[in-house]
Length: 398
Image (tube, rainbow, N blue to C red; front, side):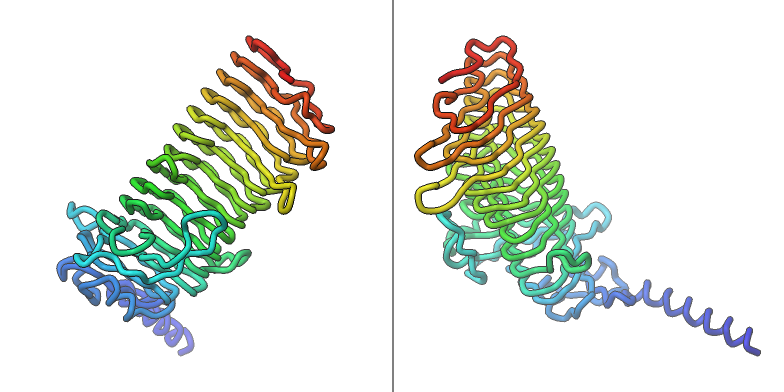
């Protein structure tokens, strides 16, 4: 008798699983669909993404069928938002409403940057412990006229650093054409941004504060004042991305314990990677080409801050005016880099007056450059040997 009861319970359990899969219910919540009724016909349907989000609870899934959705979506519930493929109908695209974008978010207060004031966000996620967004396209064409700052995606107060299940996760998303706005903005969040394409933004492709992982993205900007990536009081990992164009590829301000590794940064008008008052960061194994400045560090020793204990190693830097340069930095290590066809491989400005210096420049290889290491006359406790020079006119320049 007991065996029969157990078998009956097993059959019922299997039946529940099958029905859950068919009707969109599971231990993770309900599944809702946005789009034409013929797309995933067995599931509950909504005509707008916002309508499906408003009807959803924690752990639910919102599937978005191919098509254009002219709306500004706000998500305050921990859920999954995912674009799906329906035969050959294309992709799910959030576009600008016919009346333009209206302010619905608050931009972070970033020092000396244009990101203050209100924001008009096409996909805003805020104040939730966990969220996943994937396979969605955000098209901001024509969306910057009615708001001070147009933003494709914003994560505000999402997730919790150090908690594996509490994170904002953005996967396989395309953000394009936000005009003078920002592609992706992550503020006070623990976010993983990976395998996305962000382009056509003349201000910044990605802006972050908090703890972030930015992995394997293709990021491109245009405009002489734009940043491909801007990180403010941030920590985390920026790895395996390709960044192209703009004034600065990666701008780090007041960052600490941030690792920038194995990225390709090219065709920037100013600096490929620039550290302002940032310390204890690791800049390693990146490929940098066709920029005015490869990697720069600057501090304000008079009344503020330092650029201290950064480790810059194993990078390949070519076709730039200056490979690595700094002003008033302290106890940084520049090692095992390869510089090719630079005007100056390393340019240093130490100061006895401001008590900056004590940097280490060693085991680098300089090829086909005019000057190997410049500023040796200002060195204040900075060690700049041994290094190897090939076809370099002047290895050490005062």
